Structure formats: C-alpha cells, structure tokens
Image (tube, rainbow, N blue to C red; front, side, top):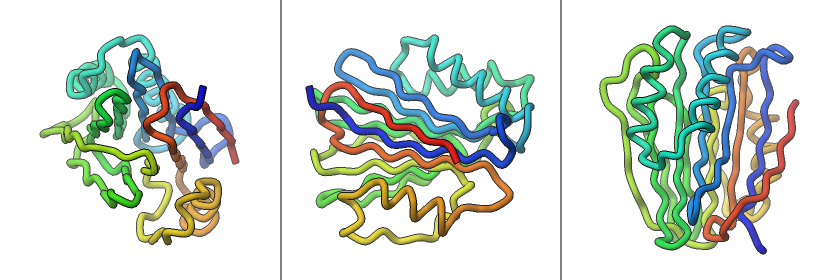
Length: 202
C-alpha cells in the first residue's frame, strides 16, 4: 500500500530536554498531524510538550477545536504550548487546519500556495480564539510545518518541492535559530491512506 510520506527533523537546544514535539495519529480514513512548541526550554518545556502529546494520543476526537479546548484546560498548570493541527481526510480530499500561536503551516503545490497564519495565544495560558479552516487538497501538494526555531523568511523554489529532504536540510542549515529548539515536518502524497514516518534528530 502506498502511504503518506512524513519526514521530521527535531533539533533541541539542550539534549533530551527539547520543548518542540510532533504527533502523527491514524484514524479510519484520516490522519492527524500535530506540531507543538512549549514555551521556553529545558525540562519544564519538555513536560508541557509531553503532556500535550499524551492528551492527543489518548483522544479519539477528530474535532480540532474541541481538542484544543481540552489541551488548554489540561495545561493550565504548565508553561503552556503553541500548536498547529492538521487533519487529512482521504475520502473527501480535504485538509483542515487548526491551532494557536506561531507554528508555521504551509501547503504547497501546483494548485495550492497557502500559508496559514494562526491567531496569537498560548494553550494553558491565554487563548482569545483559534483558527479552524478546511481546504481541498491535490495529490501533488506538500505540507510543511515547523516551529519558530526556524526563521520564516525563506522562499522555496518549485524545483525544491519534489525533494522534501532538501527543504528540511535547507531550513535546518540556513534558517535555524541557534538558541532555540527547532522542528521541521514535511508530508507528501497526502491522498494516500496510512502513513510512513522518517524521523531524525540533530
């Protein structure tokens, strides 16, 4: 079976104590992708990110706004997180974005060139509102998500899109903030059921 291809590179500022995290979770006919950035660095940030992953893993809810509300309430005793959520629906060829804070989410392809601007806020501290938007996707679309450990002033050329590994390498080598955790996630073949993950750490 051909599957969604997911490549991730995580580069914490301090070894074994990064506050950036991600989750890929399969549902019938759908896949949920989350990218998380806990405030600050070190063990407190890692605990907030780990709790968020635990909550997402335990939940069977695919209603993204409800998930964000649940996470917000559970993180009130932590440093808080910013988060980007993406739900891919294979049958309907739809992709739903939701989240809060400075997580970058881009959908790139022949028919799409979209950057999602999430509203300001911090789950576990302050959320004035959340964004939830659904769009149609094509087979050649590429999903790019990253934390603010990557400086978001780059432009990707069309020749880079077919080679996701080069995009990750470029962002990590040329646009990485030296004093912050960083995580980059790229997903391709978005309309193929299931997923295949490749993860590396720097």
